[in-house]
Image 1 (cartoon, rainbow, N blue to C red):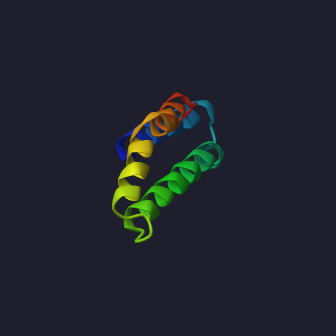
Image 2: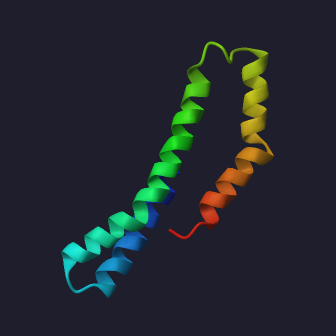
Length: 86
């Protein structure tokens, strides 16, 4: 996801610089467009990390959670993130 986010950042920043003569306005608009998406991805990443290190979710329960995250629910999350406008 990190490489994808970097590509999206470059795209959005280039678009804002191309459509705003004032670079400060371009940076402000870039930040406003990117912040919600970055925060959403950070929340999902944090949750996944907490599940990975949790002692409560160990063994078979952890395997079950990973199969759920690797299954349709996780695929749906990734699909939504990919198809969301950068």
